[in-house]
Length: 443
Image 1 (tube, rainbow, N blue to C red):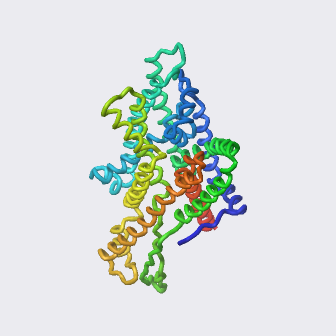
Image 2: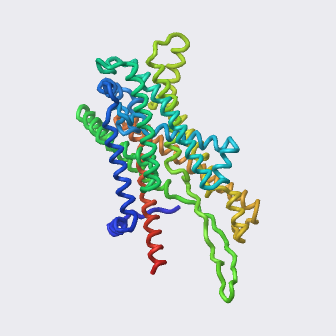
Image 3: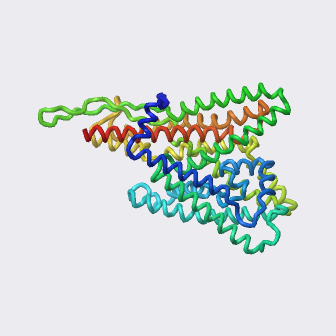
């Protein structure tokens, strides 16, 4: 297991003065500011006060609003957020495992194949955005006083669906630009900024709760202590690696001997980072969004019973939801590890055999692949179980301490915030090392 050193003042100064990094950081910051500006642009003709009051009282809507940075509660053009793009990415990656043609694009066709898959993801994002926009506007239609007086309803629905779809595509474009020209994963950073923006709201709600019932102060202190310990474990999970020793052969070139030094392959305990968490949320919230529409309809009999049962099943505050959530995190961690290029036992074994390297006590070729597969399975299992348990602890702590105002930000958001921050720091550090190496070569 390895830890990480927090950047010092000298590191930060080097970061800012490093050629190219300053521009990347400014570009990333500018795109995030643009995203925050778009959150405050409401859809034309909507009475967002009625929906904002409902979102504040409804757990599901409040949870959705958290991951859009407040855009859903304001019914802005970014109300769908990055959700359609993330859902589309999940579906395309799953299809790439099932459909041979897509698998070929991902694994064999190199950069051209990956660009084609990205194009499919973008097109499917538009389809999902239209679908979710229709559902959302259908939901709004059942709310009293949701449309301003004097607005033509037909034109309102058409323009709103177009605006929401365009807003979702714009968020997708910004996230891709951040990934390509900025620092960090664009989609994760947009979610990160949205969660950070919700902290003052959660803090004010908690302060109001404590002022009404001062006996909860000890519960709040205990909850904050649990949050702190959780963050420590998140850092450990994100940075921990399993090192597999590799023996390299000696090679003689002329009068010089190269190699012969033992190295290691680092396998991360949590190879997917925060992506399994984000994927699990996107998958679970998709049926919740559709059920929200049915919940506004005048249903009766068996249909009403089924909708009520499903709503309880996918309610973010229910025990069944957390059980499904835990299982999905475990499954998606394994899935994410299986598609990562640097975690393919057969390919690693072939490359080791090609260069004459080996694992001590293991024969090259198939035995090496089997040994690596066992190591990766055990490592990923530990990481998946740890990530799933970490995601559940703060949520149950909120119930135990009766401080439920932090419920949304405590369980899932904490992991995303810390995970994205660590990933950003690591990317900055990698960039600095690359710049220092280039400078050394030039000298």
